[in-house]
Amino acid sequence: MARMAKSKKSKPTETEVAASGKAQNPPPEQPSESTVKPVVSGHPEQDTPPATIDEERDFESFYLKQVTAEFADDLDKLRRNASDFNEKSVPILIDALKATADVYSEEEKAKAMGTR
Image 1 (spheres, rainbow, N blue to C red):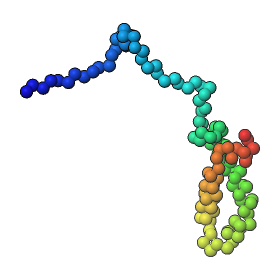
Image 2 (image 1 turned 180 degrees about the vertical axis):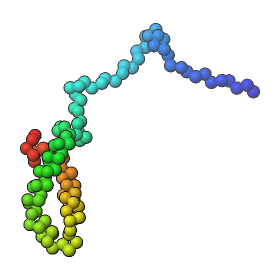
Image 3 (image 1 turned 90 degrees about the vertical axis):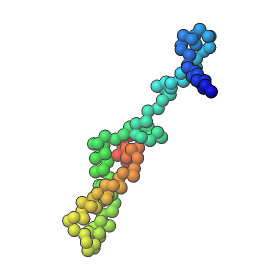
C-alpha cells in the first residue's frame, strides 16, 4: 500500500494575511521608561545605587573604627588573655571584623555614613 505524504501547513505570509483580511496579533506592548524602575543595587526594593569602591572602603574604615571603639575592652582582654593570640592573630581578627560589615545593605551603609 502506498503511503500518503502528510502535508505540512505553512504559516501564511504577510501578503496572504493582508489579502484575507485577518489581522495578525500585534506584538505585546513594551513598558515605557516611566513605568520601568531601574534596579541598580541588585535588590528591587532598594532605590539606592551600588556603592563605589571608595565608598565601600570608607564604610569599612568607619565600621572598623566604630566596632573597635565599642568593643575596645573586649578586644584588649582577648589580646592579653588568649594563650594563642600572637602577631598572626591580628590580621585574622581584622578580616573577621571586616566580614561582618558585609551584612549591611547599601542603604544601611549610606545611612550610617550620613551620605544619603
